[in-house]
Length: 300
Image 1 (cartoon, rainbow, N blue to C red):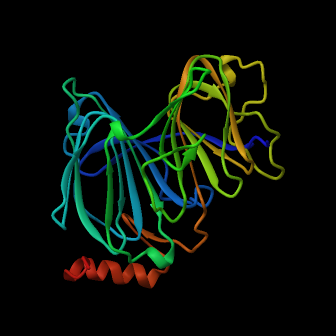
Image 2 (cartoon, rainbow, N blue to C red):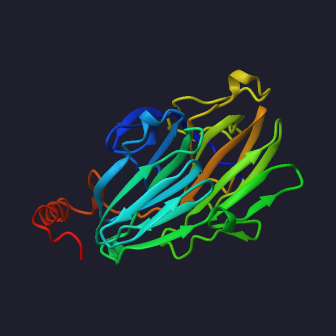
Image 3 (cartoon, rainbow, N blue to C red):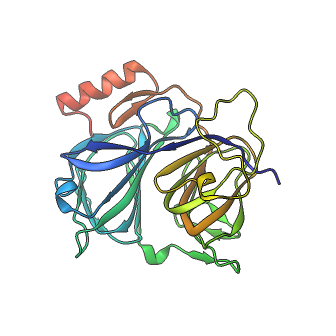
């Protein structure tokens, strides 16, 4: 097995989106070629309702898929096709916007006012940009947790891990979406297909992922070379780690354990024309989409 070297380690940045939701953006709205087929990852984590309660009122999407994963709290959603629902602790929604949809997402939090979740955007290849919109709404109880003998817990939302298959099916980019918990001071090897782009996002605890030599010619924004695993060598909460090629991710958890998302997918490798929540392949397709949005023909 070949551990994936670290390309870059960065902290997520605070941004305000929707009608005034305070969140942290791990990546998005820049050069996302290292994350292809993924375009954006937001971490919305607040304990004060005023920081999220205004939510994300009606807005369009076309040409992408949005993946919402809720850890704490509830989010009510509705769309222009008449679909309505609620996501709560542990639930995931994989929405294929395809040819176009208008929807809204309104966070409500839990009884303590806590709200925590993630939204990931995935690109669609050109032959699926104008496919019919579709939802996969999956309750947390229907997502299998794999309890390993070493004390680790891996929740498989999409893809496969050790024979455990996630309930999200039929996605063109063959994603693997894992929620990984490791107890303190545990070394873990997690297989990842060599042909996928891969990243990890730490949201609890800390750990060290630097088990491989650095790729030549790559500038590493921050890396951890001392394998004594001192606390200064470890990546902590709200840290995004981008990996180079290899067939596994190797990590050692810190003294407080670690929990992170490990996400990979097959690159689309197509041009990206991007304006807000609309992602097409050419500028003309983007102009057409905006014209349709303005003249009322956006929804197909």
